[in-house]
Amino acid sequence: MPIALRTLDDGAWISVNDSRQVSVSDVWTLSRGVFCNCEPAYVLLEGFLDVRVDGSIVFAKTVGQCLECGERASIDRLPVGRIVDGAFKPYDPEAVQSVLEPGD
Ligand SMILES: [Zn+2]
Image (cartoon, rainbow, N blue to C red; front, top):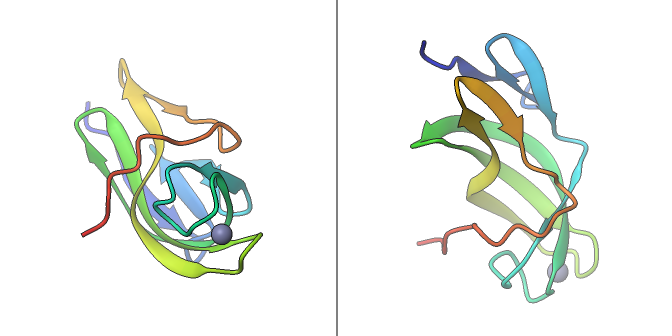
């Protein structure tokens, strides 16, 4: 069964199969300096612009701001969860995300 992914409420939520799953109000911990020079960076998201699945990983396109240095930038591929046996398993926003791919 295909997974239905979309953003709701002007990007405040990611919906998976018509269920609100990921809130924009979480602070995401990002490693490796891909967002700014802070390691890790604590990034408050402003809204989800797009969401898609690539393989079993669900990626969001989003905009966020670092709580420490104030850097504001877009993130093309923020991994927010994965699909396991047809069900969405969200990642923990507080866990350091090391699976961000370098932007181009
Ligand atoms: Zn920063």
